[in-house]
Amino acid sequence: MRPLKILPSILAADFSHLGEDVRAVMEAGGDLVHVDIMDGHFVPNISFGPDVMKSIRKITPKPFDVHLMISPVDPYLEAFAAGGADIITVHAEAGPHLHRTLQAIRKLGKKAGVAINPGTPENVIEPVLDDIDLVLAMTVNPGFGGQQFIWPVLEKVRRISAMCAGREIDIEIDGGVTAETAAACVAAGGNYLVAGSAVFKGGHNAFAGNIEAIRRAA
Ligand code: DX5
Ligand code: ZN
Image (cartoon, rainbow, N blue to C red; front, top):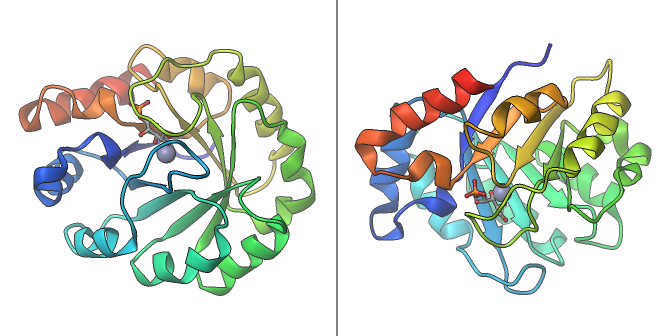
């Protein structure tokens, strides 16, 4: 059984004190930092770039899981690797040659992930199963935190976990994960649960309780 991990999405942090929020949320029990990078082109929102990530990287020794919602993605892989990413996940549609992109990530010494939008069929991962360490199933359309969980995606997550059976591939669920949806995510085969608004609601004093509620429910 792949270990369960809770990944706070720092998109939901208060950017006026991002560093303090990252420290607090990881001390409160987050397992990996989930970093959402948006370019205003692949998704209709802009977050921040590799320099900001690099400046918060030193705040915690815990791994950085970088979710690149950018296209084209290839020109930026090196910058995020240098900025301290441990896992780099790209969307299946983010470049002309998915296999080449995944190889480039591994060549940089990082774990490679593929993200699948709610409208993307899971069979895109079949030809690259040997080249990935993680599959990220989006349970909202990418671009914003705080959206409603899209339940039918869990059927696809079930099929993804069957495809990945017997392999060392983590299955990440991203979007609308809360204490209410976590159990279904795990039942479908997810083991990396990303949560933004459900973790950051209520401020620093609430972080530990929020993370624990998701972990318990899962
Ligand atoms: C959405 C991002 C998510 C987002 C999750 O495009 O990939 O990581 O921050 O936020 P919540 O948990 O609020 O849906
Ligand atoms: Zn994300």
